[in-house]
Image (cartoon, rainbow, N blue to C red; front, side):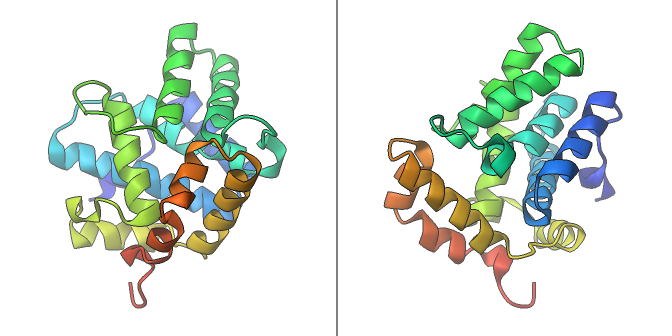
Length: 200
């Protein structure tokens, strides 16, 4: 299923990948690429029509505020990432409505579940990120897809590195969504993600 690895053919998509390469550590870059691949695979299997460029750019930029250059002392990381993405999209020449949509998709990936028929890009990013981070909804994906995605974009110690960043966010911003997840036992679910099982 090579299609899940295909980047949308646009200048904005290429620039988003370049930005993610520049600022995200390898474990975070690969998470972003796995998120897009899983989202695109789910969209294909579930026949969810969506804006591929918008989804790709959102997936590549959704966690940039977990990196030191973009970490906000006040905003939840998903909101700060949305602002970073909005500025990126302005530089890419996107109109205001599309910039706002990009930020919305990134913010909503950490909010309550979004139905596909209401907001397909936010739904797809939620499904993919949930599967990659904590294993939530992994049963939506065929074993071959999971194996292909992890082979193409290895985990590289993702669980420990991501949890350290998320727990830091929770400690400094106790009212943010990450803090709520940490209080709800999220760390245990992340550590037990079957994608990190030996031999995968």
